[in-house]
Image 1 (cartoon, rainbow, N blue to C red):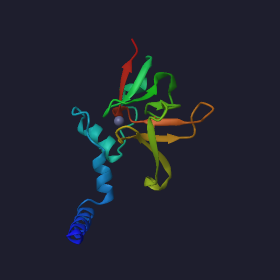
Image 2 (image 1 turned 180 degrees about the vertical axis):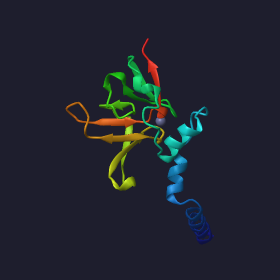
Image 3 (image 1 turned 180 degrees about the horizontal axis):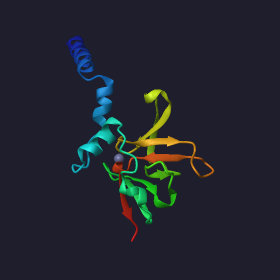
Length: 152
Ligand SMILES: [Zn+2]
């Protein structure tokens, strides 16, 4: 009886690992939480895409407030860390504590550090070490992944 149950469980886990490889499970863990996301936002956030440089209205945003994840709404950056990097993407010298998880991305033959929202797992951009402050960080973020909420 017990042995039969064990075999059943074993059989199930073999079958399920065949149908749900690990990377599929990881991809599935990123969920669309904002039902109003556009196809372009989904392409960037769920398939590690990049928006056209100088296309984001957030490049010119200078008001005080916070930048949130467009998918889950988590607070990611304070406006005080934003600076004009001249690259064409909204740029920040630091993120709020524990806002992101990072991962080395070797696409295009160069090692870059990709970062993702720590709360919902979607792609936001890459972080470089040529930033303006002492810590030297430059978070190069797709504007489409962010929602700006001004203080009032
Ligand atoms: Zn998020």
